Image (cartoon, rainbow, N blue to C red):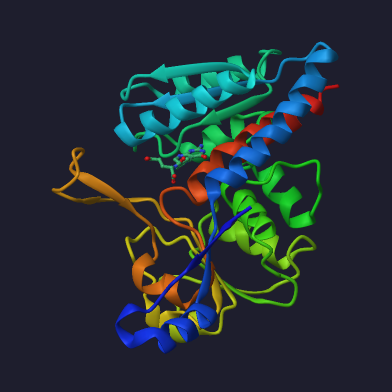
Length: 314
Ligand SMILES: Nc1nc(=O)c2c([nH]1)NC[C@@H]1CN(c3ccc(C(=O)N[C@@H](CCC(=O)O)C(=O)O)cc3)C=[N+]21
C-alpha cells in the first residue's frame, strides 16, 4: 500500500550513490491510497446494509465560521455522498447558545436516519464542548469522544468507537507493514483526541508496543524520542520534530496539520506537519507526508465508524 522511494546521494559520486540507495530505502506511507482501501471496504458494507433496508447516516454539526473547519466539514459531507451515506450538515451561527447546540444534538439523537453525530471541534469559546460530547448518544458518537467510548477503548471493548485519527494511524502502520509488537513507540502529545487514545491502541492487543507518552513537560524530549522505533507526532507545533530526535530506521507518523505562511502559494499558506519532513525523512524506514498522510485517513475512519454505528442497529 505504499510506494518505495530511493534517496540517491548525488554529491558523493557513484559508489556512495549505490551505498546510499541500499542504506536509505525509505517508504513514504501513502495515506490517500490506504484511505481508498478503507473506503472501498466501507462501500461493500454499505451495500450489504442497504440490502437489509438500512442506509447509514452521518450528521455533522458546525458552530461558527472557522474557515479550516468549513473545509473539513465540506470534505466529510462530500465523502458521504460519494459512498452513498445519508449526510446532514447543520451549520449554526457563532453566537449560538449552549442550549441551542444541545437542542440540535438531542434532535439528532432522536433521528433514526442518523447513525453518527459529529460536532466539529473546536466550537466557539463560550460553548462547553465537554457537555455537548456527553449529550451525544454514545451509540452515535462516531468521534469516540464520549466517556463511555473512552472507557470502552481502555477496556478494549470492540463495541465502542475508536477516535478516527488514532484509528487511522494504526491502520497506516499495519498497511505499511510496520511491526508494532515489541517496538518502542513514543507518542508526542497527550490530547484526548489523538495522544491518549493512540497510546492505548499501541499498548493494547492491537499494537503490543512499549509506549512512552511525551508532552510539553517531558524532560529531555529529544533523548526520549531517539529511543523510538515508532514516533507519533501530535503536538500541534509546525516542524517540531527534527532530525536529531530521530533514530536511524525509525517510522514516523505525523498527525500535525499546521497552516504556515507561504507567499509563493496562491492561498498565502502551506500545510506542514509536526515533523520537519525534509530533514527527518532520509533517516526513516517509513514516514507519512503532510498533506496526504494521516488527514485522509481521519475521514476514512469516520466513514468506517458511521458504517459500524449503522450495523449495530441491525
Ligand atoms: N469532532 C471533530 N472530529 C474530527 O475528526 C475533527 C474535528 N472535530 N475538528 C478538526 C479535526 C481535523 N480533522 C481533519 C480531517 C481531515 C483532514 C484532511 O483530509 N487533510 C488533508 C488536507 C486537507 C487540506 O488541504 O486542508 C491531508 O492531510 O491530506 C484534516 C483534518 C478532523 N477533525
